[in-house]
Length: 326
Length: 264
Image (cartoon, rainbow over the protein chains, first blue to last red):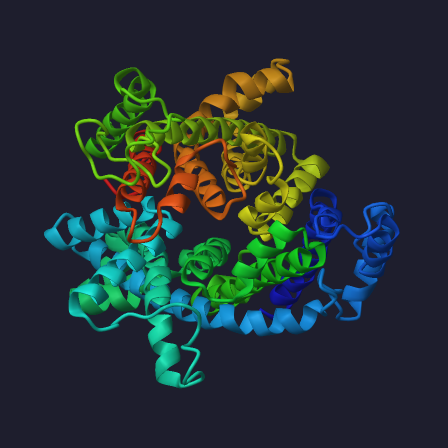
């Protein structure tokens, strides 16, 4: 198991380095930071703009390879450079990472667990009313893009608030400007965004889990367990679900990208100042260093999810642990 | 085909028909402004009401749907084609080429696609969006195609064809392509759904289709908020309808062409 994990870690590490470099090169080649400076009123002289851009390592007249070298050297020393305003990217990055994680982690965990349970339940009740309604709901939810879901939930909340005359649902930002920091207030602000993330995640996972569970429903080992006298419920839970969960770990790794993406829309719609919102704003401004840093963190997140899925896979599947299958 | 697949096909046909025939039926052009009606509800004059700027929602939404459909279908076709070629080449050729191609796929999988697409897309008109979207959608399909091609190219009849002197291109076209075609067809349909969603999301953020061009994403972005219900409702509803139709069609096709083990 240790050797297997080590090998995976090395190859994933190389992938992250390359992906980060690719992200920087694409951002540096495609975005136009000069436009942001030249658009200011009054328009600064060209020499001033040039000097400012060079100081921030954003000057498009410096060859891309040189800019990349400066950036990579900085990243190796844990410095993602400076934003267009000259603030260090690092400080902002860590602050916003916290904001994003407070949204993504509860959404992913709740959605994942709910999805797996619903999917397994639907498979066990195959063809009955429960299965039909769960399948139909997940099918419909999968067709609703996250941003539509987020705007829709906001609209519903506004209507409910207006109908009751009390502000039941609040969402703008992380907490109210007065009384900021109170845990209850933060949780209230988190409610709607988390519901949106959870719904999107649960729809996806329940669909996968139902398919996987159907595969093992009539498997020989489940029949053996029943023949030994286990009830259907415990045979399915202990033998069926465990086997059906193993491929789920791979889906989990793949779905991380979707989760991060959903986070971008939810943050934008609900005005949470996390990484996703920063990314969209930075692309609009042409802020190369910020965009590259966010892409790097996203790549790290996907790779970390892959590692977690490897570990889970090893825990659930003895064949991986013993090295019988790669 | 399963009931689901038929339902998806019918829905898709309705949407395509609406999008293509809508402008002929509608009394308003999508870029026409009615200066006597701003932000009105549905009426005989404007079937789905008007936007804040006095545009006819019915015509506007159908125009947006046409753009979304075109972008989605083109991107899906392009990405599926790329996935088929890369996957089959990797699976049949094997060796170094296989490793390099799959490694490239892994590299692109690590970067959340829309984040990169969002960086690349701005500034261009909508045709630029199609290849950029497609460039970040082919990886997972290519992996499954490779696996299918690998197992197909090890079969006896393929080996026999090889020993009879058939070259690699002939083997690919005659023996491997039919094996992976079902997978590709089903995935193309699902990719279209993903592409329509991605386009809508990008345009919603203001990074995809830009004014004066209109797509469902831009209408949703303009129409959000409780004040302007009709444009948002119509555009969001149509977007969901398109994605639902394509997803159902893809599921139905997959059930028929590539039945899951033990499920039936």
